[in-house]
Length: 453
Ligand code: TYD
Ligand code: MG
Image 1 (cartoon, rainbow, N blue to C red):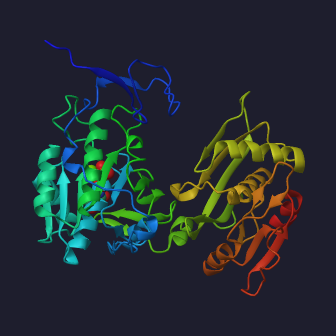
Image 2 (tube, rainbow, N blue to C red):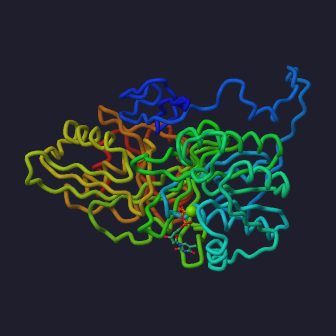
Image 3 (cartoon, rainbow, N blue to C red):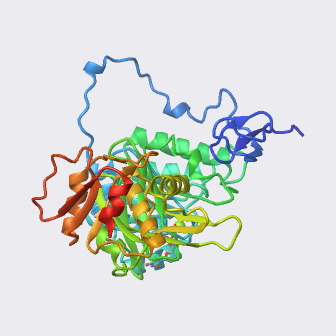
């Protein structure tokens, strides 16, 4: 029997190589190569139907209007998508199993169906009955919402052609297989092949397609990373299934702002939008506890108030523990060193635990000052002055640097009832105190500590 040709694929990014390698040259992941049947043979006719006789055109002669967007009416989702679904676009929705991907997409399809749109939900994970039960729970029962339980790519494409819905959801891309490849569903080759053909189909027909992709920690199944560069928009679910909140973050968006977030709460009846995330993230905040600082952080185009908590306590270990959840641990190490050298707060022999309440991740430099304030407050065991928010970037010499969008942050803090704001002196000259907010401008960490308590 003729031996089928195999190649080695990186589980993380899909890089293909004729031989096994310890480290992937494309994404630098170690030990990620697995052997699979090689992708399509040369001269393969699978894509023949997609051939067209396009010729080069002058950009001046091409007609294009801003593509029509389909509003989902799930406002937080529309926000992340940049105002709605762009016709013919491919959107990848990634996240841990059980986090709410199927629930959100079914809710979205129901909303679209209520607006009279034709929508199709293709599932390879659940039976029609199970989907119906979920639908009953979240109030999805519209006539225009079609359900298809199928995993064979060719059949799915046929049905898509026949039904020609406005929007389709493929749940999940890891269960779909193409019979032209011998490898198992979920393998790198299959995921690339099926997603590739679905995306081409979307472009050709103008049907918008959502692809659901599970992220697995051990990477046993080809992750959505493989697909990120192929699709137009990438949304990831954050938060863990133990908590009620869910954050949908736009990682990439060809048709809108990226890094925008939508905040949801998982209830018995599905995902509910959280209209006021600042209130949500500050809801359990203790009054006048040391080690807690509030920072207005920009999430996409919107400021959200988050609480940074620090616990600094003398360590009994030779090597003190450093744990940070929700903020970059390298950044924290740097700030600890700056506090030590510049402010004389010697945290070196202390365990330091940092947490962003509510489980949101904040990656902006503007939270530096909040991290420093929370650590100093815990170390000195003095609560920060009530009603205070802080923001600013901290440099290696202890200087506080200016950041973008200061006025927006101050407005959000005012709206949430805060009365005092510690902000960088740099770039803040033109901001006035007219809003009733007391502004304390600081140029370095010494000035921060003077104003904090
Ligand atoms: P699901 O959408 O199936 O996750 P995914 O598709 O990302 O794997 O979400 C499943 C979880 O959500 C499950 O733990 C139950 C919970 N859930 C609710 O709390 N309320 C609901 O109304 C629904 C439908 C699910
Ligand atoms: Mg699911």
